[in-house]
Image 1 (tube, one colour):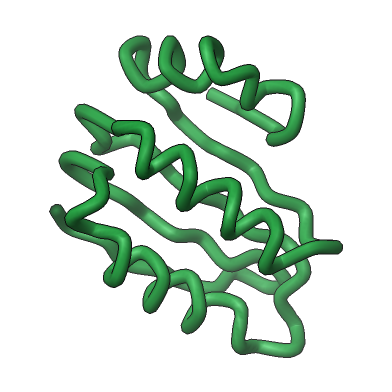
Image 2 (cartoon, rainbow, N blue to C red; image 1 turned 90 degrees about the vertical axis):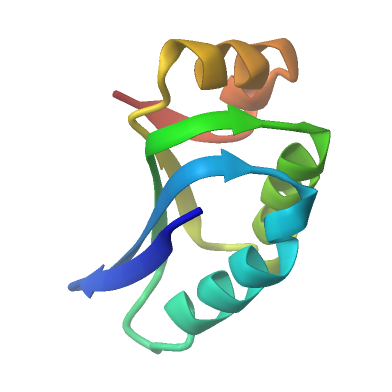
Length: 100
């Protein structure tokens, strides 16, 4: 899976591709940690454009990230139909801002 991040003003954007699963938890944590290091960042966008699959571990990673960056606005972007379905079943639209 390809994962990277960039900063645009006060927003850190993490781009995720492929499958987001337990196997990727270390890389996800490292990328997220790097993304929030800047004192200018107060908003985190996760771009799911390239994500083809996510499992329950991925849901847990998102919840842990939310807990870790309390006070930051977190936005889930470009969730395809399959990913959006999983997020909707887990009621993530109630705790995350989700945009297409």
